[in-house]
Every structure is written in C-alpha cells, then in structure tokens.
Length: 255
Image (cartoon, rainbow, N blue to C red; front, side, top):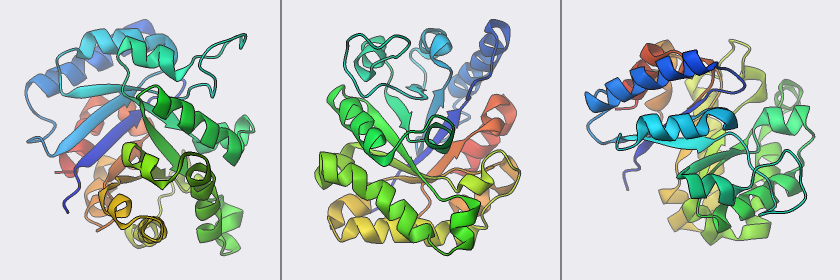
C-alpha cells in the first residue's frame, strides 16, 4: 500500500503579524501555483494559536491545511489559558501536534497526559500528530526502542489501536531538534521500521496505513535522502518551515 506523504511545518513560538502575513502569502502563492506537489503530498502548517485564524483565512481554498501546536485534554471548563481541540476544530483546524518533546521536557507532559490529549483531539475530529522520541542519553544507553514503544503504548492503551487509523506519528529524536544534528537516514529508518513493526503486532492494517513522519533538523539539503527511506512518510519541520522557499523545497523532496 502506497502511503501519501505528509509535510507539517511547526512554527513554534515565532512570528509577528507582519512576518506571518508574508509567510502565509508566500505559501498561498506556492499552493495556487501547484508548486507543492502533484497531489501526492499533504501539507500542513502549525502556527502559534494566536495566528491560527489568520492562517485559516489566508489558506482557505488552498491545498495547505492548518494545524495547532498543542491542545488541552479537556473539552471545556475552568482551565485558564488553555485551548480545547473542540475550539480548534470549530475554526476549521484539521491537525494538532501532541506530545512534542518540548511539551514533554519543558512543560512536564507525561505519557498519560499526552494520551489523554490524543483522546480528546480524536473526539473533536482532529488528526493528532503524535510525537515520540528519545533523548541523547537514552540513545547512548541503547533504550531508544523502549522509550518510543512506551510513549506509543500509553496512547494505544487509552484509545485502542483502531483509533490510530485517524492519527499520524512523528518520530523526533530529541537530540536532533534545534541542534543542527540530524539522525542519519539509516538511524531514522531503523526507528520508523521498529514503530511500524510494533504497531503490526496490534494491527497489520494500521501499521500499513499510518503515516510516520521524521522530525529533527530536516532541511532542503537532507529531506530527499530521509524521505527515500521505506518507512519515512514525510516530515515534521521546525525552523525550516519559517522560510517559505526552504519549506517548499522540502515539500517537493517528498514527491
């Protein structure tokens, strides 16, 4: 089964009204010119929450979807400062990044909390981009497979394997995020293959269908080699997604 590629841009906490307008304008131009692909690549941008409405307005009718960078595990209530998946869905958001290593490490999000967020996002009709990955110390200790399996199993235990039909997985080696270091294609493929094989022990159909993205200092210069790997179905792009031309080149590499 041929899986469609997905390239998602995570803008993190970057942008001003002027810079966001310029970036969205460039992306709209590329989309209208059908420069992303021949329909073989899905593209999504995930701006800070404040700029989600601007992204939705600028990209309406284009081939570029809009995602959120995080969402609450609650649907509604007295949770000052939080945004629920249902709120994002009501605006027209389609994806949400959950369990990003920065959320896990800087904000203390546990495997259980990430799983609860995935459950809530699915109930709202969003497609979670579930992030899993190991730290440098964990890789040095040889426990990469143990770590990513634990993170994935926490979600499966809560929502069930069949729910992953509506999810995307992103493998992001924590040591390669924002550091300039990148896992070699062989290193990335090894973990992607492990994730797919582990899923297959629960459901061969889910394992075959699910998109597994690579995230970790993906650039135009290394995207094609990474995306050529059998079990890598696109990328979760950080800093490079803030440059429209660079992001376009990564999307084209996914073709």
